[in-house]
Figure (cartoon, rainbow, N blue to C red):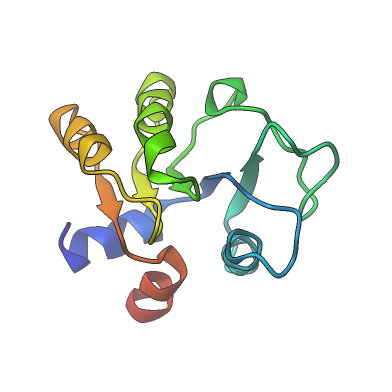
Length: 133
């Protein structure tokens, strides 16, 4: 995806579902979600193992449990789980998917692109945000 398109997507987004968000503050998913929250985005933690509030938000077990529009699905899962996350993102009508470094799946990227869902793979959303906005 071109840098200008990424910039526009990030600028327009308001709600980011973070799939695989950890409640451990030293994990990249937590620090990146906290950064995004501090930039004004609403974060929705998506992790079936979380029981309590994370970053002031109550987690949901899956994307399909979210009852509002999601602008970006930010993925922190092992590659073998990413295709199912992309299917869920398509099912809920998400605006785009973002596969963090280590969470890339060529299969999921092809599926997203074939369905017309904008997708970024292998780039850190926080690095891109700092660079582009």
